Image (cartoon, rainbow, N blue to C red; front, side):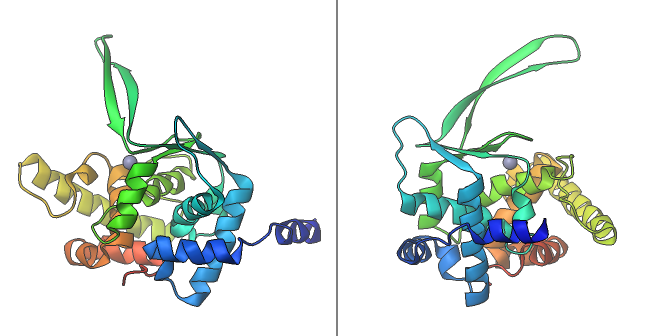
Amino acid sequence: MRSWLTRLRRSIPEPDPELWREARMRVPWIGALDTVRDARLRTLAARFLHRKTITPVATLVLDDAQRLQLAALCCLPLLEFGEQGLHGWSQLIVYPDAFRVNRSHVDAAGVLHEWDDELIGEAWESGPVVLSWADIQADLASPREGFCVAVHEIAHKLDALDGALDGTPPLPRDWQRAWARDFQGAYDALAREVDAGRETTIDSYAAEAPEEFFAVCSEYHFSDPALLRAELPEVAAHLRRFYGPSPFE
Ligand SMILES: [Zn+2]
């Protein structure tokens, strides 16, 4: 069984070298990786393309180079965690731009509330990841401003792997305990600031819920690690261990 698996894995072709060179030029996070992690990401991106369907919708068309760049971006959070981070879902849907989603919720009194949200990314607990191509391009154009929507949505996928979307991905037990304590403390402190109406350096969206806190801090890890270290040193240390050093460290 093992040798059969090994053979199967070997049969997944590595990305075309020319397309990978282009990805390194177009995606600043890839261009900043050392050779060992660059090779690891290349292999992960090949697995991603093998296992996931990338579906552009509406007017969007994606060529092989763009598909490889998307796959590599989505695999950045898996550099240490590995390929098992891709489990549990199969489709990446890409909209040309931000997309509207109809939401509904029945409250305790039985009243149905409906509203529209404009989203740039979304990760269903056991369904597809949805991303806006325009917002990915904006991330690539300003990679050090604290935003990376692909990393955000994949962080949600990692979080959901243990069956609970709660801001804690699957970890060894001791680490999980320390993680939960440090993240909860930092989340509560940020939520207090936001509730008091004070300006926060960390994007206030992180105070929406513990899972959003984890996803937003993951974006900072990749795109503004110095700010994360200065504002939330314990959280930054956990994320550095979980994701490996930020390409921009
Ligand atoms: Zn989110």
